[in-house]
Length: 345
Image (cartoon, rainbow, N blue to C red; front, side, top):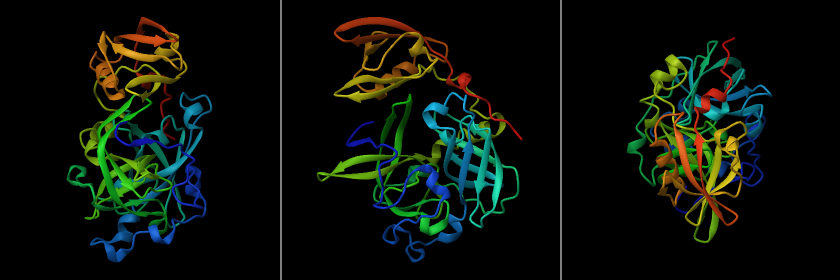
């Protein structure tokens, strides 16, 4: 991450008195009226566009690789983009054995976790029953500008959506070996951001909600949403529909959670059964170099790591731990090999 943005814990409130836990999507709550979008402020049919946003609830096996970090029940939003095809943020459906789509008229339709791309973060769900909702057309995220008025749409229509603006467009580096060259950030933040649809002033889908972050502005902390731009979906959607993943060599994965502190990449956690765990790296280690090339940022760390080759390549790191600097070689892997494959019911 770069600039004045900092990670926001998932339980921090976006609006006073509004629950933001992902499970709250399936309970009764409303965005405060002052933050709700008003039909007269937009040139498109707001209610029709928001009807394409559905609730999503997934069940993950207790022994799944991501169960400990992401939980065994996950809830958020999804956006209908084709006949029965729902776009969401991938962590909601990773390793899901059951997915349910909650429609605005109260119906619940079973879905199948069709595909997930760890590079972009997108996930696809195929409805297994009729949902009879008009898809939201895909727009151009590249055309979106800072200051543009947008709607961050949640399942439930206007009362669960936020009239927002594009606050920033910048690089985003996630602690879980994830990097976007240019993410979209919106303010005010949506309280149930996961899988929420970013709708442009023209009524088109230009991104999908991923995170809530905190930034400092004029000496005060304010919450923003990090949105994955829709243009990243277009090159990969056909592969996701056909194969469930993108048909290209996987990036090398280390199973290391890290953050950037004072121009240093610091390990903050280690994923069980991953290469970093096998190499006995620990929280508090500082990554100084990749294959002898010094790094001072998280994004540089990822780019040098991925430039070494596909998953399976050896990754030479220079590490500093409690006054000692040493070299270690990690045998990278494909993260997908550790994940349970979704089942088609």
